[in-house]
Length: 339
Ligand code: KG4
Ligand code: ZN
Image (cartoon, rainbow, N blue to C red):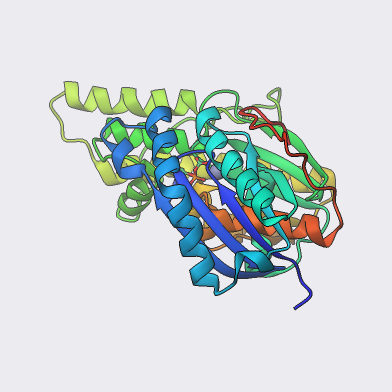
């Protein structure tokens, strides 16, 4: 067992995640979520999230250590999400990581949330090829990233200029009165609908548009207008068709741009991460298009795609394995930390 044993803490949004890995092996993945508390507000409320992290932190760390069956004293390091994310929420995780690392005499590794979303795939499919192209799609971000070195060199190629992909799912679900978070429900309804029923717009796909940027707010508005017109005409809204057609528009643009980035950069591995990577249509479409293009697709299982502590531990372990410098004790929580 000479692979690094690392505990990772994630508190960038509404999940208090604590994971433990040994190298590429997942030993524990404990999660406490405040999502139900936020549901009635239709989105994450930062103050509620911070307080929930504070209450869940120590019990979730204890649960992870118990699940993994390891002693805290055996850890080779403690990793924590330093950003980007909600400032107050990040601060709870960073403070906890510092306290544990300092008390135990272990090195502290502040890591980037987006890089962790990529690195988590090592727990599913083993060592990440370098370079890897990554499509990260969640409620907070939609980015195409080129990762020549997951611990030190992750380059943003493009991102959303307005809503994140998951945000679009959440907003469309709200218009359809399907609750929050919207992604899983839309995914479910879409299975009964026709993806070609309604021709919704594909944002930023014109010849003069930025090739790797995304825009989903026009799509969201188009869906809302379409639904409103139906309701005003006194007609029933075909929820399954709307869900399927909306989902098709999002996944079409995401996969098209990701494959183009692979082609342009000469990269033959694509990883898809973030909460929206759990989407069944996105997975199927990416599989089909990657197979056609001769690109190897890597998508972690859904539980590893959404925010969790294991992804932070995975990146921490990679940093230990590569002898990267530990963070200083004054490591800041940076809500807009760039990759
Ligand atoms: O990565 P994540 O857990 O949290 C961050 O936003 O960082 O992603 C949550 C987002 C939500 O917007 C949720 O609606 C979306 O991921 N999501 C999905 C699916 N499952 C979760 N979107 C589409 N299809 C899904 N099956
Ligand atoms: Zn995330």
